[in-house]
Amino acid sequence: MLLWIWLGYNVLVMLVYGLDKIRAKRGWRRTPEATLLWMAALCGAAGAWVGIFVLRHKSRKPRFVVGVSLMLVAQIALLLWWRFW
Image (cartoon, rainbow, N blue to C red; front, side, top):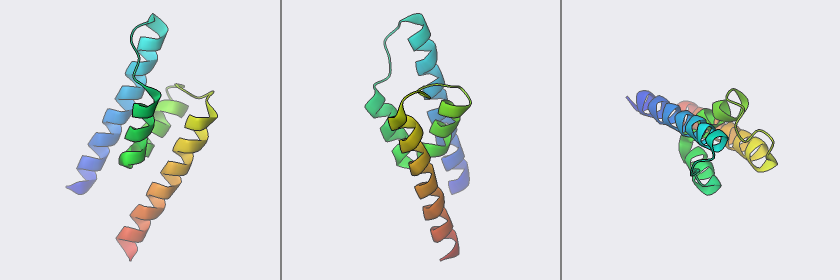
């Protein structure tokens, strides 16, 4: 059950990154960068990582590329520690 919640949340985060990219291209109101980073920090780093590297959104900003990658590593380490401890 917890896995499905985590997967659903990461899909939501990926969609938010994708929608922000569409809004950027059209000149519409954007999602604040702080919101995107907080969504990644709150167990959504996998979805954010897909948004950055597959959807190519915020891929030129080191704060996102490095920050989200480090969050993903930390979240995977935490998951492995929780699962096997």
